[in-house]
Length: 503
Image 1 (cartoon, rainbow, N blue to C red):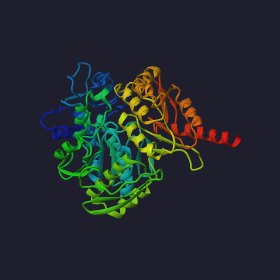
Image 2: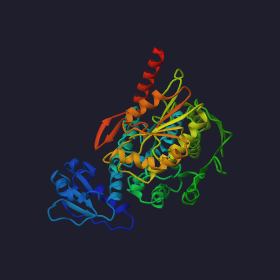
Image 3: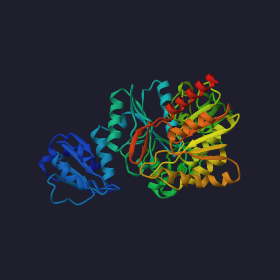
Image 4: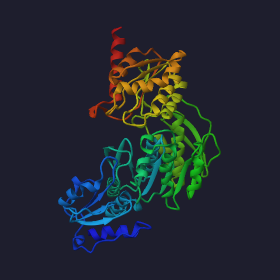
């Protein structure tokens, strides 16, 4: 494919926009890639200059041209010091997505791609769906918060949904590895920034909408509008799988061309039978248009009932058989950092690590754990820095209202003062403290907070370590250092066992 042939995708696919391609003969060379980072440009590549919050990519056009980029795509006028061909567009991010899809040969058209959006539940739902596809004999790739899976290969994720060229490259690699399906988490950032435009989705899933990412979206309406875009770009024949227990679900039913609804509390296409909860998993029936399927899953708690319903509804809408659905659900042992049981049957306390990092996710976690706790519920958590500050006191309030002991610690403070973040979280916890409903401790060092909580727990207590889940690092003062909640919890449990043996 030449650079000119690639750029012709813009004249074809940018609806309502006239894109003029220069007659420059330099465009008739083989295209070597589509880049958004000027440092990665090479001879024969196309550089798309993205407008950013801190810097404008157009400022790096001279550097890209000097490295061999033969064409620059930008929303800005051409500067005098750039000799490469200049293509003006109205939306550079959309152009990047369309060019990336064209360059990698539209891999999504040859796979069943399921996009999952929502505040909570995306990761678990994606793991469930991948397990179902695999049980049905359909090799399935995975793209999300924890990892990118390409055939037998797994890569630690850098973003929930990467930039468009990275998404298209991953899909191309999945297709070449024999995958015939791909399940991907689609973040609100990705939808707002057009990273998934150009993907042919076989289905879209909406899990729920609760407060998060308001540092980026500013308000809940803008946040929801970003989520809604997934259903606006679905092909007409693609099912839109929607949680109608969520207040926002009903409006999405009107957007989806082919809605498939699920719920626990409302009438829907897919609903569960009677529910009971235990630490060893879930067992219940699911009613759907195709009949009834029986679920046995190692996942725990009411939020995972919703995730299972989403996966069942999506698989059924795509024609996956009941036997494969049941086998896939049963086969999934768990999801890293999602209600991950760290303690063993030989321990006298229960320790769980979870990714909950919003007030709603923390509430769901505590509601799951409370009926399973024979004694006290001890919650260790913090709030991230350089992110939505409004959720911090809400998290403190939820934790103090629903726990017996709360240990507020650091999450990823990033460039903020960890002590200031803890004080903002503590503000929400103070009313419960004053009423004597919870003991609240501030312990900025996360490692010490985990060690202290597990050491001081009494037999029968449940210790929840929330916020970071699968993450293997901590970011403090702009510096990233290795840190793993699961590993620290294992260390603390081993120390507790040693102490018990000595005693």
